[in-house]
Amino acid sequence: MTDFFPILCFDHLEFYVGNARQAAGFYQTFFGFTNTAHRGLETGSRKVASYLMEQGDIRFVLSTALSSDHPIAQQVLKHGDHVAVIALEVPDAVDAYKQVTARGAIGAIPPTVVEDEHGMLRYAAIHAYGDVLIKFVDRTHYQGIFAPEFQPPSLIQPAISDSLENSVPYHQGMGLQTIDHIVANVELGAMDQWVQFFADTMGFELLVHFDEKSISTEYSALMSKVVQDGSKKIKLPINEPASGKRKSQIQEYLDFHEGAGIQHIACSTHNIIETVIKLRQAGVEFLHVPLTYYEDLEVRVGKIKEPIACLAELGILVDRDQDGYLLQIFTQPVEDRPTLFFEIIERHGAQSFGEGNFKSLFEAIEREQALRGNL
Image (cartoon, helix red, strand yellow):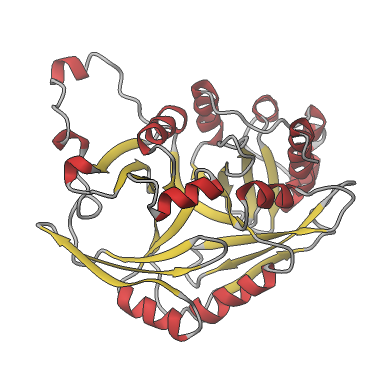
């Protein structure tokens, strides 16, 4: 496959939430993000308040509606707090929109230009699975902090004096670097449709396919396909439930999210042990992995540089493919609904997604489902 237009990177993910100010505090306290910009009534935004949260090259925008009849408020009522927009940086948002809509994508936001004293920002968006939008952002002619109406916190509230600020240790974050991949859950029978959608409209290729035999336990199963762009920077796994004795984790998500959507965000780190320790100290909860997983671990995956005892204590999983190995761990859901969660991943050459860990991961999720009464 050949990309129909270039994609530079994940620009940002936009979350629709019930209270953006509180959500910003959550992601700052628990995940180490820094609030670098804000828009709201104080900056001239009359309908939406948003907080830009950054760490490494990751940007989250947390947005809340300022009235109950706004579409964001209606989506939050339906889905709870959720990832609503996958924004991709492109050299030309108008061309990207024309390319995808000409090939069958349904437009959501036509090519739009917004500007301020820092230049012009161009963007457009199309519909994807569920209520998720894929947004194309062109920053070629914009030099501002993020977008018009966004201002840095120092312009909103008085700055703290250097002497007072230096008296408190600065929180440096948790070591999260990039968005590695973004996983969606779709309804039974819809996975192939969306794989074809990305191939037809954006030129993405199928990277790997996992069937119900690869990802299953005694009680439930799922199927998954991963699509990626030509640069291999944009990886989008897509899951659908498979038949089993009981409700799968994918069906649980679909029930509580009330439709298809983003299941988890994988964030990369250069030192997963240090990152997980910091996250746990901040209060982030992870899925439990039985100690039996670590018996003969190096026999299964080969030699690794990290101490097995440390990985076992933290619950970090390991897998290997022909290119190297990876380490990964999964959080508990970060909402009251059992929907969105995070994966922390450190790659040492491996380009896969931890296939050797699927069974252990699936069983861990099922234990949590059982505690919730949803298995």
